[in-house]
Image 1: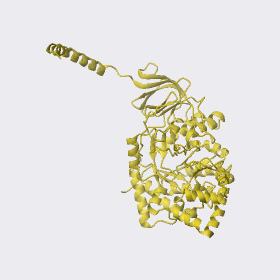
Image 2: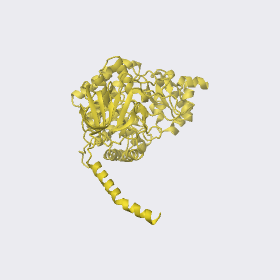
Image 3: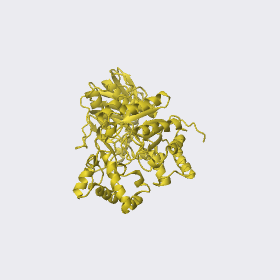
Image 4: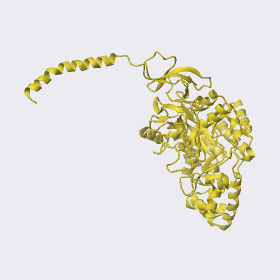
Length: 541
């Protein structure tokens, strides 16, 4: 650059600096738009169960800033919501969303239903290192908000392996310490899977002792996959199982929710009112008891839980193999495996939905036929080669029971769905469609429940139960978790035959004010947040 050019540039610098200063001053003083986004003219269901009102919803800084007539307000974006339903983001009260896995972190199957928050760590399997998991979500990013429970099964397995016995005083003290640590780190309560091992080996009194630790935090929760929903081999029966769950809450001081509440098996068809009456009686005497449901007649669990008697799984895989190797024990097992499956409709009703492609998509009966074996031989082969397998039990729930329970004022909604791994061909459709199916079937098509009642079971009811004071409702100051739906097209698409289909009808979904779905398209946004319980400690440290 010549000396003259440098001089010319130098002579222009003051005016450039002045121009920049003026521009910055104008930007600082220019009025900011009142809202980042305004949805105009939607039918707003606020999550309380009230009827819809025609209103605009303004979002600013990740919060709902205003609800009303905002037509004259300034906004960075104004989106026409005429003819659409604006609801709080849905809360999956019992979920198995795989937020820790790359294939499930964005939570698309859940977002497509309008779900923006999921409860995890359930069926007794929640980890006790709660802070570590919550911190990982914050670091890696998640597509929906997540909250956690600490699991009795996970703790018992860590301390006692798969032993079928009572804990020693030292072991019980260690389990209590693990529950206390998890609660201190933000767990919402204690989860049990008393249907599963090793939880099934625990007495009611053992669970109450651990629940009392969690109850040192006011309003904490006892979430249970109870011991016997009605189709458990050599079980205690449906009625006794509900009574046990209520007793644990009543004696420990925890509030209770029954996971996927619904009696199982043909012997319990038409008996939903029995369990509902037990819950109503408990609530009448001051015990807070709630429940969640999905609208499918098929369950999903694991083959051991459905086919093996509980005594046969004590000690874990090596012990199971020793029992299969003992001729006399094997003879007993062959009979009892068939009796166990018979309670569930037989091997034709057990559909394998495992990640293993050699098993996936076949019923136990079809697998045995394909391998040229008896059913007991086929089961033994699976347990020997694979250890276990994920399965569905078709037609185990009665749709009339499910329909009846949908009308209960304490009934939340869940998917109980696990994000399928890549390449998993046959899966339970509930992970893709539970909320949309409940809305379509029970509210829109059959009018068993009203749309406002259904939305409350998706939103405000769960927010109240989980103590989510800033979610679940459309009110100023709440987090902008929003589901903007076209109810005319909102429906589940996933079927047993073709499960990998997202629900339709979610036009926009916002998580903490950020679009996760916009104009019916996924954006891959990781706007979810880990949620720590806000319960106050009332114990004596």
